[in-house]
Image (tube, rainbow, N blue to C red; front, side, top):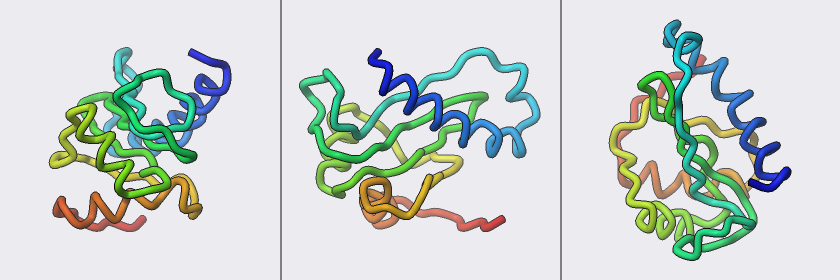
Amino acid sequence: MTPFKTLLLTGALTCVVPFAARFDTALAAESTGRITVIYDAFGKDSAMKKDWGFSALVEVAGKRILFDAGNDRDIFAANIKAKDIDLTNLDFVVMSHRHSDHMAGLIYVLERFPIRLTIS
């Protein structure tokens, strides 16, 4: 894994883990998890379309968290399909900040999957 990707994923977990811990105190005891990069410009997976932006599915402590949603809804949708990712049972969607290269795929998620909105 490149230093940039490691730094990016570490930053993503730094934002997501404390948020998820609030809802699941067992998180601290959980030592395994998985991060599936859905959207980036530098990955080596030839099945994935590359574009500027970021998205990852973080699975930890029994929770499934979509972190960001990329720069283009069609590329996001293609990458979801290429990775065979099921977004029907997400626990959280976290948008790191309001830049289009992190939010555009959210339209795809909202159009296809029912959500319950909680603001805290």
